[in-house]
Image 1 (cartoon, rainbow over the protein chains, first blue to last red):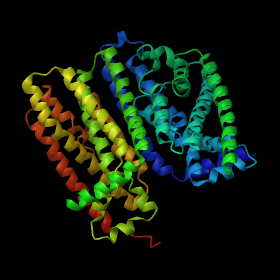
Image 2 (image 1 turned 90 degrees about the vertical axis):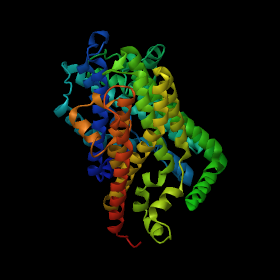
Image 3 (image 1 turned 90 degrees about the horizontal axis):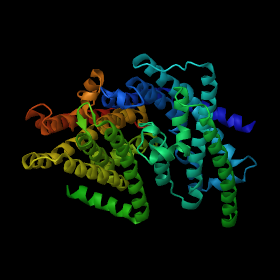
Image 4 (image 1 turned 45 degrees about the vertical axis):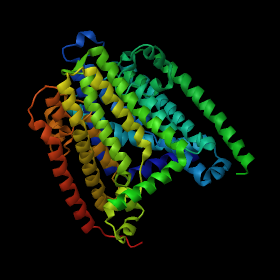
Length: 259
Length: 261
Protein backbone atom coordinates (compact mmCIF):
# COMPACT_ATOMS: atom_id res chain seq x y z
CA UNK A 1 0.00 0.00 0.00
CA UNK A 2 1.28 3.43 -0.95
CA UNK A 3 1.01 4.90 2.59
CA UNK A 4 3.03 2.03 4.06
CA UNK A 5 5.73 2.62 1.42
CA UNK A 6 5.77 6.34 2.27
CA UNK A 7 6.15 5.44 5.94
CA UNK A 8 9.05 3.10 5.18
CA UNK A 9 10.79 5.67 2.96
CA UNK A 10 10.49 8.31 5.67
CA UNK A 11 11.98 5.85 8.17
CA UNK A 12 14.92 5.13 5.85
CA UNK A 13 15.49 8.83 5.14
CA UNK A 14 15.91 9.52 8.84
CA UNK A 15 18.40 6.67 9.15
CA UNK A 16 20.93 8.88 7.39
CA UNK A 17 21.19 11.22 10.38
CA UNK A 18 21.75 8.59 13.06
CA UNK A 19 24.98 10.07 14.46
CA UNK A 20 23.60 13.60 14.75
CA UNK A 21 20.51 12.22 16.44
CA UNK A 22 22.60 10.33 18.97
CA UNK A 23 24.23 13.64 19.98
CA UNK A 24 20.81 15.18 20.28
CA UNK A 25 19.73 12.25 22.44
CA UNK A 26 22.46 13.14 24.92
CA UNK A 27 21.10 16.69 25.07
CA UNK A 28 17.58 15.36 25.51
CA UNK A 29 18.81 13.23 28.41
CA UNK A 30 20.43 16.34 29.94
CA UNK A 31 17.09 18.14 29.76
CA UNK A 32 15.69 15.15 31.63
CA UNK A 33 18.44 15.27 34.27
CA UNK A 34 17.78 19.00 34.78
CA UNK A 35 14.05 18.43 35.31
CA UNK A 36 14.73 15.47 37.58
CA UNK A 37 17.17 17.60 39.60
CA UNK A 38 14.50 20.29 39.99
CA UNK A 39 11.96 17.78 41.30
CA UNK A 40 14.41 16.05 43.61
CA UNK A 41 15.44 19.49 44.93
CA UNK A 42 11.82 20.54 45.38
CA UNK A 43 10.63 17.33 47.03
CA UNK A 44 13.58 16.80 49.36
CA UNK A 45 12.14 16.63 52.88
CA UNK A 46 8.65 17.43 51.59
CA UNK A 47 7.62 14.11 50.09
CA UNK A 48 4.73 13.76 52.53
CA UNK A 49 3.17 16.94 51.08
CA UNK A 50 3.16 15.50 47.58
CA UNK A 51 1.25 12.70 45.85
CA UNK A 52 4.55 11.87 44.12
CA UNK A 53 7.81 10.83 45.73
CA UNK A 54 11.17 11.99 44.36
CA UNK A 55 11.57 8.54 42.80
CA UNK A 56 8.10 8.76 41.20
CA UNK A 57 9.06 12.07 39.64
CA UNK A 58 12.38 10.69 38.43
CA UNK A 59 10.53 7.91 36.61
CA UNK A 60 7.90 10.38 35.40
CA UNK A 61 10.42 12.79 33.85
CA UNK A 62 12.46 9.94 32.34
CA UNK A 63 9.34 8.51 30.68
CA UNK A 64 8.25 11.97 29.46
CA UNK A 65 11.65 12.56 27.79
CA UNK A 66 11.14 9.29 25.89
CA UNK A 67 7.56 9.92 24.80
CA UNK A 68 8.36 13.47 23.68
CA UNK A 69 10.11 12.00 20.64
CA UNK A 70 6.92 10.18 19.69
CA UNK A 71 4.30 12.82 20.31
CA UNK A 72 6.05 16.08 21.24
CA UNK A 73 8.82 16.89 18.79
CA UNK A 74 7.06 16.56 15.46
CA UNK A 75 7.88 18.40 12.23
CA UNK A 76 6.46 21.93 12.37
CA UNK A 77 3.21 21.94 10.38
CA UNK A 78 4.29 18.55 8.95
CA UNK A 79 5.94 20.74 6.26
CA UNK A 80 2.55 21.42 4.64
CA UNK A 81 3.32 25.16 4.80
CA UNK A 82 6.28 24.73 2.41
CA UNK A 83 3.98 23.28 -0.23
CA UNK A 84 1.59 26.20 0.24
CA UNK A 85 4.42 28.70 -0.14
CA UNK A 86 5.92 27.22 -3.30
CA UNK A 87 2.62 26.18 -4.86
CA UNK A 88 3.30 22.44 -4.77
CA UNK A 89 0.22 22.01 -2.56
CA UNK A 90 -2.08 22.28 -5.60
CA UNK A 91 -0.39 19.24 -7.10
CA UNK A 92 -0.32 17.36 -3.81
CA UNK A 93 -4.02 17.93 -3.21
CA UNK A 94 -4.85 16.87 -6.74
CA UNK A 95 -3.14 13.47 -6.39
CA UNK A 96 -5.36 10.39 -6.32
CA UNK A 97 -3.97 9.59 -2.87
CA UNK A 98 -5.60 10.94 0.27
CA UNK A 99 -3.62 14.08 1.20
CA UNK A 100 -4.18 13.60 4.94
CA UNK A 101 -2.84 10.04 4.83
CA UNK A 102 -0.08 11.04 2.41
CA UNK A 103 1.30 13.64 4.86
CA UNK A 104 0.65 11.79 8.10
CA UNK A 105 2.11 8.46 6.97
CA UNK A 106 5.41 10.19 6.25
CA UNK A 107 5.44 11.71 9.73
CA UNK A 108 4.50 8.31 11.16
CA UNK A 109 7.62 6.87 9.51
CA UNK A 110 9.71 9.53 11.23
CA UNK A 111 8.09 8.78 14.57
CA UNK A 112 8.71 5.07 14.12
CA UNK A 113 12.36 5.91 13.51
CA UNK A 114 12.29 8.07 16.67
CA UNK A 115 11.01 5.11 18.65
CA UNK A 116 14.11 3.06 17.83
CA UNK A 117 16.78 5.74 17.60
CA UNK A 118 15.54 8.40 20.04
CA UNK A 119 13.10 7.08 22.66
CA UNK A 120 14.75 3.70 23.31
CA UNK A 121 18.37 5.02 23.57
CA UNK A 122 17.20 7.85 25.86
CA UNK A 123 15.28 5.32 27.97
CA UNK A 124 18.41 3.19 28.12
CA UNK A 125 20.49 6.20 29.23
CA UNK A 126 18.06 6.85 32.09
CA UNK A 127 17.97 3.14 33.02
CA UNK A 128 21.74 3.14 33.42
CA UNK A 129 21.89 6.38 35.40
CA UNK A 130 18.80 7.21 37.47
CA UNK A 131 16.72 4.11 36.82
CA UNK A 132 13.60 3.44 34.78
CA UNK A 133 10.21 2.16 35.88
CA UNK A 134 9.19 -1.34 34.87
CA UNK A 135 5.41 -1.91 34.74
CA UNK A 136 4.34 -4.60 37.20
CA UNK A 137 1.18 -5.88 35.51
CA UNK A 138 1.12 -7.57 32.11
CA UNK A 139 -2.06 -5.75 30.82
CA UNK A 140 -0.21 -2.44 31.33
CA UNK A 141 2.02 -3.25 28.33
CA UNK A 142 -1.03 -3.77 26.13
CA UNK A 143 -2.74 -0.55 27.24
CA UNK A 144 0.55 1.33 26.95
CA UNK A 145 0.91 0.36 23.28
CA UNK A 146 -2.61 1.60 22.52
CA UNK A 147 -2.11 4.78 24.53
CA UNK A 148 1.17 5.61 22.77
CA UNK A 149 -0.42 4.96 19.38
CA UNK A 150 -3.31 7.29 20.24
CA UNK A 151 -0.86 9.88 21.59
CA UNK A 152 1.00 9.83 18.25
CA UNK A 153 -2.24 10.15 16.26
CA UNK A 154 -3.43 13.06 18.42
CA UNK A 155 -0.14 14.91 18.04
CA UNK A 156 0.13 14.24 14.30
CA UNK A 157 -3.39 15.65 13.95
CA UNK A 158 -2.56 18.77 15.95
CA UNK A 159 0.52 19.39 13.81
CA UNK A 160 -1.44 18.67 10.62
CA UNK A 161 -4.01 21.26 11.70
CA UNK A 162 -1.25 23.83 12.19
CA UNK A 163 0.28 22.98 8.80
CA UNK A 164 -3.02 23.07 6.93
CA UNK A 165 -3.84 26.46 8.45
CA UNK A 166 -1.14 27.77 6.06
CA UNK A 167 -3.75 27.48 3.27
CA UNK A 168 -5.50 30.44 4.91
CA UNK A 169 -2.70 32.25 6.73
CA UNK A 170 0.54 31.32 4.80
CA UNK A 171 2.57 31.95 7.97
CA UNK A 172 2.42 29.15 10.58
CA UNK A 173 5.41 29.89 12.83
CA UNK A 174 3.35 31.48 15.56
CA UNK A 175 0.67 28.75 15.37
CA UNK A 176 3.39 26.12 15.72
CA UNK A 177 4.88 27.96 18.73
CA UNK A 178 1.49 28.13 20.43
CA UNK A 179 0.65 24.50 19.64
CA UNK A 180 4.02 23.29 20.91
CA UNK A 181 3.77 25.37 24.09
CA UNK A 182 0.32 24.04 24.90
CA UNK A 183 1.44 20.51 24.05
CA UNK A 184 4.39 20.48 26.45
CA UNK A 185 2.90 22.89 29.02
CA UNK A 186 -0.55 21.35 29.37
CA UNK A 187 0.68 17.91 28.32
CA UNK A 188 2.68 17.61 31.54
CA UNK A 189 6.28 17.77 30.32
CA UNK A 190 7.59 19.39 33.50
CA UNK A 191 4.61 19.27 35.87
CA UNK A 192 2.14 16.36 36.05
CA UNK A 193 -1.16 18.04 35.17
CA UNK A 194 -2.86 16.96 38.42
CA UNK A 195 -0.33 19.18 40.25
CA UNK A 196 -1.24 22.27 38.21
CA UNK A 197 -3.15 24.94 40.14
CA UNK A 198 -6.95 24.98 39.78
CA UNK A 199 -8.78 25.55 37.46
CA UNK A 200 -6.06 24.28 35.10
CA UNK A 201 -5.89 20.92 36.86
CA UNK A 202 -9.64 20.41 36.31
CA UNK A 203 -9.68 21.39 32.62
CA UNK A 204 -6.40 19.96 31.27
CA UNK A 205 -7.25 16.24 31.75
CA UNK A 206 -9.95 16.65 29.07
CA UNK A 207 -7.80 18.49 26.54
CA UNK A 208 -6.00 16.70 23.67
CA UNK A 209 -2.58 17.77 25.01
CA UNK A 210 -2.95 15.47 28.03
CA UNK A 211 -3.67 12.62 25.63
CA UNK A 212 -0.42 13.28 23.78
CA UNK A 213 1.99 13.09 26.73
CA UNK A 214 0.48 12.79 30.22
CA UNK A 215 -1.82 9.76 29.79
CA UNK A 216 0.65 7.38 28.13
CA UNK A 217 3.23 8.24 30.79
CA UNK A 218 0.75 7.74 33.63
CA UNK A 219 -0.42 4.42 32.15
CA UNK A 220 3.22 3.36 31.91
CA UNK A 221 3.76 4.31 35.57
CA UNK A 222 0.51 2.48 36.45
CA UNK A 223 -0.85 5.58 38.18
CA UNK A 224 -4.13 5.95 36.28
CA UNK A 225 -6.86 3.57 35.22
CA UNK A 226 -6.65 2.40 31.61
CA UNK A 227 -10.05 4.04 31.03
CA UNK A 228 -8.25 7.30 30.21
CA UNK A 229 -7.61 5.71 26.81
CA UNK A 230 -11.26 6.54 26.07
CA UNK A 231 -10.50 10.27 26.40
CA UNK A 232 -7.61 9.75 23.98
CA UNK A 233 -9.87 7.80 21.61
CA UNK A 234 -12.43 10.61 21.56
CA UNK A 235 -9.73 13.10 20.56
CA UNK A 236 -8.38 10.72 17.92
CA UNK A 237 -11.83 10.53 16.31
CA UNK A 238 -12.68 14.22 16.70
CA UNK A 239 -9.34 15.54 15.41
CA UNK A 240 -9.06 13.08 12.53
CA UNK A 241 -12.62 13.79 11.34
CA UNK A 242 -12.09 17.52 11.65
CA UNK A 243 -8.82 17.38 9.70
CA UNK A 244 -10.37 15.28 6.92
CA UNK A 245 -13.19 17.82 6.67
CA UNK A 246 -10.71 20.73 6.70
CA UNK A 247 -8.62 19.09 3.98
CA UNK A 248 -11.70 19.08 1.75
CA UNK A 249 -12.22 22.78 2.56
CA UNK A 250 -8.60 23.47 1.62
CA UNK A 251 -9.02 21.61 -1.67
CA UNK A 252 -12.11 23.67 -2.53
CA UNK A 253 -10.28 26.85 -1.64
CA UNK A 254 -7.50 25.93 -4.07
CA UNK A 255 -10.00 25.19 -6.82
CA UNK A 256 -11.56 28.62 -6.32
CA UNK A 257 -8.14 30.23 -6.67
CA UNK A 258 -7.45 28.15 -9.77
CA UNK A 259 -4.69 26.09 -8.12
CA UNK B 1 31.20 50.48 14.29
CA UNK B 2 29.64 52.97 11.89
CA UNK B 3 29.35 50.27 9.25
CA UNK B 4 27.88 47.87 11.81
CA UNK B 5 25.15 50.35 12.76
CA UNK B 6 24.34 51.05 9.10
CA UNK B 7 24.01 47.36 8.25
CA UNK B 8 21.99 46.80 11.40
CA UNK B 9 19.52 49.60 10.67
CA UNK B 10 19.06 48.23 7.14
CA UNK B 11 18.26 44.84 8.55
CA UNK B 12 15.86 46.39 11.06
CA UNK B 13 14.01 48.31 8.36
CA UNK B 14 13.56 45.22 6.20
CA UNK B 15 12.15 43.27 9.17
CA UNK B 16 9.67 45.99 10.08
CA UNK B 17 8.04 45.65 6.67
CA UNK B 18 6.07 42.76 8.17
CA UNK B 19 4.81 44.40 11.36
CA UNK B 20 1.90 42.04 12.02
CA UNK B 21 4.07 38.97 11.57
CA UNK B 22 6.65 40.51 13.90
CA UNK B 23 4.06 41.24 16.59
CA UNK B 24 2.43 37.80 16.50
CA UNK B 25 5.78 35.96 16.44
CA UNK B 26 7.11 38.05 19.36
CA UNK B 27 3.98 37.46 21.39
CA UNK B 28 3.95 33.73 20.77
CA UNK B 29 7.67 33.37 21.50
CA UNK B 30 7.21 35.33 24.72
CA UNK B 31 4.23 33.13 25.55
CA UNK B 32 6.32 29.95 25.28
CA UNK B 33 8.84 31.23 27.77
CA UNK B 34 6.13 32.63 30.05
CA UNK B 35 4.33 29.27 30.21
CA UNK B 36 7.63 27.65 31.14
CA UNK B 37 8.03 30.04 34.06
CA UNK B 38 4.40 29.80 35.12
CA UNK B 39 4.83 26.02 35.44
CA UNK B 40 7.90 26.52 37.61
CA UNK B 41 5.95 29.05 39.68
CA UNK B 42 3.19 26.44 40.09
CA UNK B 43 5.71 23.96 41.52
CA UNK B 44 7.38 26.46 43.82
CA UNK B 45 4.10 27.89 45.05
CA UNK B 46 3.08 24.43 46.13
CA UNK B 47 6.41 23.29 47.57
CA UNK B 48 7.92 26.67 48.65
CA UNK B 49 11.51 26.25 47.46
CA UNK B 50 14.02 24.19 45.53
CA UNK B 51 17.04 23.42 47.72
CA UNK B 52 16.76 26.70 49.61
CA UNK B 53 15.92 28.92 46.60
CA UNK B 54 12.44 30.48 46.57
CA UNK B 55 10.47 31.51 43.48
CA UNK B 56 11.82 35.08 43.35
CA UNK B 57 15.41 33.94 43.79
CA UNK B 58 15.05 31.35 41.02
CA UNK B 59 13.24 34.07 39.01
CA UNK B 60 16.38 36.17 39.13
CA UNK B 61 18.47 33.34 37.66
CA UNK B 62 15.71 32.55 35.16
CA UNK B 63 15.38 36.16 34.00
CA UNK B 64 19.12 36.69 33.47
CA UNK B 65 19.47 33.43 31.53
CA UNK B 66 16.35 34.14 29.41
CA UNK B 67 17.39 37.69 28.55
CA UNK B 68 20.93 36.56 27.66
CA UNK B 69 19.93 33.76 25.29
CA UNK B 70 17.12 35.73 23.64
CA UNK B 71 19.40 38.74 23.01
CA UNK B 72 21.84 36.32 21.38
CA UNK B 73 18.99 34.97 19.25
CA UNK B 74 18.01 38.53 18.22
CA UNK B 75 21.46 39.79 17.26
CA UNK B 76 23.34 36.66 16.21
CA UNK B 77 20.69 34.94 14.09
CA UNK B 78 23.07 34.20 11.21
CA UNK B 79 25.71 32.73 13.52
CA UNK B 80 22.98 30.59 15.04
CA UNK B 81 21.76 29.49 11.60
CA UNK B 82 25.27 29.09 10.22
CA UNK B 83 24.50 25.55 9.06
CA UNK B 84 22.73 27.08 6.04
CA UNK B 85 25.99 28.65 4.81
CA UNK B 86 27.68 25.28 4.76
CA UNK B 87 24.79 23.21 3.41
CA UNK B 88 23.86 25.67 0.67
CA UNK B 89 27.45 26.70 -0.05
CA UNK B 90 26.83 30.39 0.72
CA UNK B 91 29.96 30.81 2.81
CA UNK B 92 32.15 31.43 -0.25
CA UNK B 93 30.26 34.65 -0.97
CA UNK B 94 31.16 35.95 2.51
CA UNK B 95 34.85 35.27 1.98
CA UNK B 96 35.16 37.49 -1.08
CA UNK B 97 33.78 40.61 0.65
CA UNK B 98 36.12 43.29 2.06
CA UNK B 99 34.65 42.85 5.57
CA UNK B 100 35.38 39.86 7.84
CA UNK B 101 32.87 36.98 7.52
CA UNK B 102 31.96 37.24 11.21
CA UNK B 103 31.14 40.97 10.93
CA UNK B 104 28.96 40.20 7.92
CA UNK B 105 27.16 37.44 9.77
CA UNK B 106 26.53 39.64 12.78
CA UNK B 107 25.08 42.48 10.73
CA UNK B 108 23.22 40.55 8.07
CA UNK B 109 19.97 39.93 9.88
CA UNK B 110 18.05 40.47 13.08
CA UNK B 111 15.48 38.08 14.50
CA UNK B 112 13.21 40.62 16.11
CA UNK B 113 10.56 38.02 16.89
CA UNK B 114 12.82 36.90 19.76
CA UNK B 115 12.43 40.33 21.41
CA UNK B 116 9.22 38.95 22.96
CA UNK B 117 11.38 36.49 24.92
CA UNK B 118 13.69 39.30 26.07
CA UNK B 119 10.76 41.40 27.27
CA UNK B 120 9.33 38.40 29.08
CA UNK B 121 12.74 37.78 30.74
CA UNK B 122 12.92 41.42 31.84
CA UNK B 123 9.39 41.16 33.26
CA UNK B 124 10.38 38.10 35.28
CA UNK B 125 13.42 40.03 36.55
CA UNK B 126 11.25 42.98 37.60
CA UNK B 127 8.68 40.76 39.36
CA UNK B 128 11.46 38.82 41.11
CA UNK B 129 13.31 41.94 42.26
CA UNK B 130 10.09 43.40 43.69
CA UNK B 131 9.24 40.07 45.35
CA UNK B 132 12.68 39.75 46.94
CA UNK B 133 12.07 42.85 49.11
CA UNK B 134 15.77 43.78 49.27
CA UNK B 135 17.03 46.72 51.34
CA UNK B 136 18.25 49.82 49.53
CA UNK B 137 21.95 48.89 49.46
CA UNK B 138 21.30 45.34 48.21
CA UNK B 139 18.86 46.61 45.62
CA UNK B 140 21.30 49.25 44.40
CA UNK B 141 24.13 46.72 44.08
CA UNK B 142 21.88 44.24 42.23
CA UNK B 143 20.58 46.85 39.78
CA UNK B 144 24.09 48.13 39.09
CA UNK B 145 25.36 44.59 38.53
CA UNK B 146 22.49 43.24 36.39
CA UNK B 147 23.72 44.73 33.08
CA UNK B 148 27.18 43.21 33.75
CA UNK B 149 25.78 39.73 34.33
CA UNK B 150 23.40 39.95 31.37
CA UNK B 151 26.14 41.20 29.05
CA UNK B 152 28.48 38.44 30.28
CA UNK B 153 25.67 35.95 29.63
CA UNK B 154 25.22 37.20 26.07
CA UNK B 155 28.99 36.91 25.49
CA UNK B 156 29.08 33.36 26.89
CA UNK B 157 26.07 32.45 24.75
CA UNK B 158 27.60 34.03 21.67
CA UNK B 159 30.90 32.21 22.30
CA UNK B 160 29.08 28.89 22.62
CA UNK B 161 27.09 29.72 19.47
CA UNK B 162 30.26 30.59 17.57
CA UNK B 163 32.06 27.44 18.69
CA UNK B 164 29.04 25.40 17.57
CA UNK B 165 28.92 27.26 14.25
CA UNK B 166 32.62 26.53 13.72
CA UNK B 167 31.92 22.81 14.09
CA UNK B 168 29.89 23.17 10.87
CA UNK B 169 33.18 23.57 8.93
CA UNK B 170 33.70 19.88 9.54
CA UNK B 171 30.21 18.46 10.07
CA UNK B 172 28.04 20.80 7.92
CA UNK B 173 25.04 20.25 10.16
CA UNK B 174 24.97 21.77 13.67
CA UNK B 175 21.31 21.85 14.73
CA UNK B 176 21.74 18.73 16.81
CA UNK B 177 24.87 20.12 18.46
CA UNK B 178 23.01 23.29 19.40
CA UNK B 179 20.61 21.36 21.61
CA UNK B 180 23.66 20.09 23.45
CA UNK B 181 25.73 23.29 23.57
CA UNK B 182 23.03 25.97 23.88
CA UNK B 183 19.47 24.91 24.62
CA UNK B 184 20.13 22.32 27.34
CA UNK B 185 22.80 24.38 29.21
CA UNK B 186 20.74 27.59 29.12
CA UNK B 187 17.71 25.69 30.29
CA UNK B 188 19.84 24.35 33.14
CA UNK B 189 21.07 27.87 33.96
CA UNK B 190 17.47 28.90 34.64
CA UNK B 191 17.74 27.07 37.97
CA UNK B 192 20.30 27.12 40.83
CA UNK B 193 23.38 25.02 40.13
CA UNK B 194 23.31 23.44 43.61
CA UNK B 195 20.41 21.19 42.55
CA UNK B 196 22.51 19.35 39.96
CA UNK B 197 24.63 16.24 40.45
CA UNK B 198 28.42 16.78 40.56
CA UNK B 199 29.17 15.74 36.98
CA UNK B 200 26.62 18.19 35.56
CA UNK B 201 27.99 20.98 37.75
CA UNK B 202 31.51 20.27 36.45
CA UNK B 203 30.27 20.62 32.84
CA UNK B 204 28.47 23.90 33.60
CA UNK B 205 31.53 25.42 35.26
CA UNK B 206 34.10 24.26 32.68
CA UNK B 207 33.43 23.37 29.04
CA UNK B 208 29.96 25.00 28.93
CA UNK B 209 30.44 27.71 31.58
CA UNK B 210 26.83 28.89 31.98
CA UNK B 211 27.08 28.53 35.77
CA UNK B 212 29.25 31.65 35.95
CA UNK B 213 26.72 33.76 34.08
CA UNK B 214 24.08 34.12 36.81
CA UNK B 215 24.49 31.57 39.60
CA UNK B 216 27.92 32.69 40.84
CA UNK B 217 27.18 36.44 41.18
CA UNK B 218 23.60 35.98 42.44
CA UNK B 219 24.93 33.64 45.13
CA UNK B 220 26.92 36.56 46.52
CA UNK B 221 24.32 39.26 45.85
CA UNK B 222 21.61 37.32 47.70
CA UNK B 223 24.05 36.47 50.52
CA UNK B 224 23.88 32.75 49.79
CA UNK B 225 27.64 32.25 49.74
CA UNK B 226 30.86 33.32 48.07
CA UNK B 227 32.59 36.69 48.25
CA UNK B 228 33.21 39.79 46.16
CA UNK B 229 35.21 37.72 43.66
CA UNK B 230 31.96 36.11 42.58
CA UNK B 231 31.08 39.40 40.88
CA UNK B 232 34.33 39.49 38.91
CA UNK B 233 33.96 35.97 37.56
CA UNK B 234 31.19 36.43 34.91
CA UNK B 235 32.96 39.12 32.82
CA UNK B 236 36.36 37.43 33.19
CA UNK B 237 35.02 34.02 32.13
CA UNK B 238 32.98 35.60 29.32
CA UNK B 239 35.98 37.45 27.84
CA UNK B 240 38.23 34.41 28.17
CA UNK B 241 35.62 32.21 26.53
CA UNK B 242 35.05 34.74 23.75
CA UNK B 243 38.79 34.74 23.07
CA UNK B 244 38.81 30.93 22.80
CA UNK B 245 35.72 30.98 20.54
CA UNK B 246 37.23 33.58 18.18
CA UNK B 247 40.48 31.58 17.96
CA UNK B 248 38.53 28.43 17.17
CA UNK B 249 36.46 30.29 14.53
CA UNK B 250 39.65 31.53 12.80
CA UNK B 251 41.07 28.00 12.98
CA UNK B 252 37.86 26.71 11.37
CA UNK B 253 38.01 29.25 8.53
CA UNK B 254 41.63 28.28 7.79
CA UNK B 255 40.48 24.69 7.40
CA UNK B 256 37.46 25.51 5.29
CA UNK B 257 37.37 23.85 1.89
CA UNK B 258 34.85 25.14 -0.59
CA UNK B 259 32.93 22.56 -2.58
CA UNK B 260 33.60 24.74 -5.60
CA UNK B 261 30.02 24.54 -6.71
